Structures are given as structure tokens and as C-alpha cells.
Amino acid sequence: MSNITTLKVGEQQVTIEAGELVGYQVSGYEFMHQKGNPGWRSVDTEMFPLIGPTNEADFKVKTPKGFATQDQHGLLREMKYKLMESSASKAVFSKKYTANTAVLNSKYPKKSTAEKLSWPYDFEFVKSFELIDNSLVVTFSISGEEGMPFMLGYHPAFMLHSNNAIISAGEQNITIPEVMEVGSRALQVPNTDVITLKDEKSLQITSEGFSHFMLWTEVPNMVCIEPITFYPYAVEQDDLAEGFMVLKNEPAIFAVALKPM
Image (cartoon, rainbow, N blue to C red; front, side, top):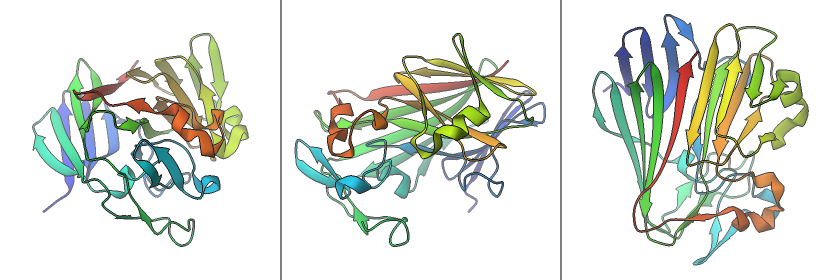
């Protein structure tokens, strides 16, 4: 059975591979970074239930239920999505986790000493893609135990078609060399919910429920523009819990819209 899901409305076409957004074309113009190109082995992923590195904290993060073993950006990325529904314009995927279940860490042993990861709470993470009003809307719904702490970051990578792309946020214009100079920490763009990538064609990225963005790349042919609820490098790794939100008795909803301009 193929793990490729395709959405198509008018001149927009979306390609999803096992819950990962691997293509967004409008009139044949590809906005997403492509696997195999320099820069990153993925195209998009989610950072959950935390954002940021944990190696200096011995891969431990404090929660109300004790310490949890987490590697960089959490354990959700190590789990597989299940397709729940699909149509020509919409696809819905889900990941369900049972508290304290051990999840193998793909970074072990080459890049991490933590072989298995775990989280002391049940949760369901639903990711949906929908073509609406000449844009692609990616929505995240998080449900689980009331009081569960979490952070959320969305980590999409965009293809750059020229050598002079600019990332615009309000009155701030950021160049790709400026993003590269910051390195692995990623460049924070605080207190904003709209960023525009200005390249051969422009793409507006609008977020709902997130508070900030961060920008990352190590190469000139792609850039990650990441909506985040918390910028993890603002604190020491031992203090990452300062950035947690708390799940209430209803699903927490977040959304990101990609709109060609």
C-alpha cells in the first residue's frame, strides 16, 4: 500500500509521504525543500512535547510526573503517522502515545546516548492538511491528560530558488547568510505570527496558537521557517520546563497557513 497522499485543487498540488509534507506546488512552482538536496534529510516534522536540545541535561526533562527521557525536539518525530481520512482537498493523520511507552531513538548511538525515549502522559496528536482559499493550511490538534505540559514547534523546510531570498517579518528583513551565521541555535524571530519568504515567488507563512518563529539553515539552497510556542535557547537545558504550556480539558489547536503571494 502506498504511503503517498496527494491533494489537488486548481493549480495547487500537495504531496504527503506518511504524514510528512514533501511537496507543495502551485502552477508547477515547488515551495518545499526536496529530500536528497543539500541541507536536511527531511522536509517537515513536529517538535513535541518539547523544543530544543537535551544532551547537556543528560536527556532528562522535568515534568509534574517526574523526569522524562527526551532527545532533541522530543519523541513525536520517532513515531509513525496513521492516515485517518483523505479527500481531494484534505488529509488527516494521527499519532497516539500511551504513557511511559519506550520509543526507540534514531539518533542512538551515533548522535545520542539515549537509546529509548518516553513521556509520562497519554496523548493523541492529529495533523491535518487542507487546501483552502488558495493556501495550504496545516492544523495540529493535541489531546490528552489535563495538566500535561508541552511545547510545540512546526519544522518545515522551504526550497530557495535564487541567491537573494529575503525573510520578512514586519519591518525586519533577514538574509539567508544571516540565518546561517547563527548556526544550530536557530535565529529567533519573537512575538510574530506572520513571516514572508520572498524568493522568485513569495510565500506568506501565518501561524495561530504559536508565539514566535525561529529560522535555521546551514546551506544556501533551503531554509526552515519554524513556528514555535517557546524559543528553547532562551534558557539553560536544565530549565527547559520553563517553556511548557499546559494542556486543558479540551484539545489544544494550532495552525499554520502557507499562502503563495
